[in-house]
Image 1 (cartoon, one colour):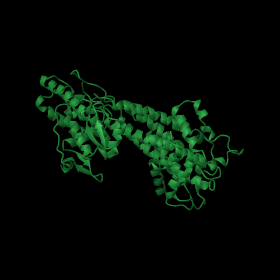
Image 2 (spheres, helix red, strand yellow):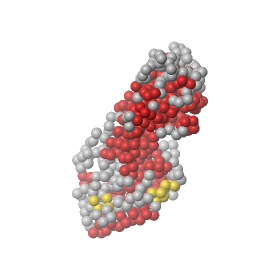
Image 3 (cartoon, helix red, strand yellow):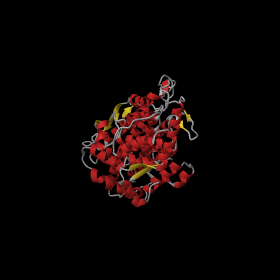
Image 4 (cartoon, one colour):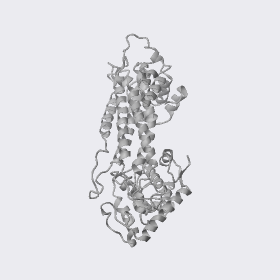
Length: 512
């Protein structure tokens, strides 16, 4: 995708990803420009009439009853941005800030915010010139949306604040604008408030997380199947008729994936008729689709919530087509906070069950004749022993991160904002959980591939052969201990990259 057009009806998740993670240029559709101009004319008429309207002729938050004289209303908007750009901490990643800016343009383009088109165009210019505001990680409570993070973005439009430099350093915004030939914007009544009221930061992070989770939940089926194969597990618990009698769609999809991934394996054939083989595999093996499938269903719910938010007007106050300007609570991030917390719980459990399979693969008493810690010379060598320690530590961290942020409201603004969503915190920690899940699946992939290599001369399934081929280029054959961290990093790259999945799908068709 080379161009994303922002319509008066909004954008799609694919649009957000293309701008946040890609190089897509952004343009405003003429209908969006017209919608903004129409809503601005309503604000202009209200100003001329001298009517008291929140954010137009009054202060903000607990100062909502303070009248502001006409000659100071532009000053009010600039003061709002400066005072609300109060975040601290490390900068948010470029992709998060770009997603947030695009979504703020989307919000303005819906024509309910009462801003001049030039304000949205100024944000588009930042995106198209790759000027990324420095947005600190701490500051948002998801109260009136993401006030502080959005204020740090808006401050750059004024030629103030900071932007991210090429190496992540902090650069004065005035210098960055001058370098790319952009000029600061002067705000009019209502425009400062319209730039910072909304759920754009948490929605941006949620959309990025949904994309990541889609990939990781599919890869969780792959690493589970490889581990089950390496442990001489049974494919029978994944038969479709066993999942038809419990019709959760995610479970059925996950089971179908694992069943197909295990076909065509000499490793599986070697014990199919062995009467000494365990009658039932451990839960971490045969319940893999029940856990991963529940996570898939959770993700479906989160996608619905994010899709609704993409259609939503989240500003306050909003300008209605009939000329009214009404105060709303649509900026409250509860829907997104709840969804992010729910997905974090699900993702944490996908990682937890993967770690249990790793532990089983490494334990000589449970791995069905694999050498201890998957080392051909255990004792002098420790094999993957400490990789499982790392995985266990990550599982513990994910359990802490799975504690919901959305129940942790703290009142602000002199008790005017007496219940907040903590949606920014919920979506931010969700991204950490998913990054941790990448590492956990990488450890399982590494252990499963080692296990399959140690089953030689038996040949694994097509999926197993693809995994041994792709990861084996980096990790080599089983042997004496080596510096393990680079192997784990290589496995992370394989989990989040396209190569392994493409190789598997060439053999067995698309994964569900």
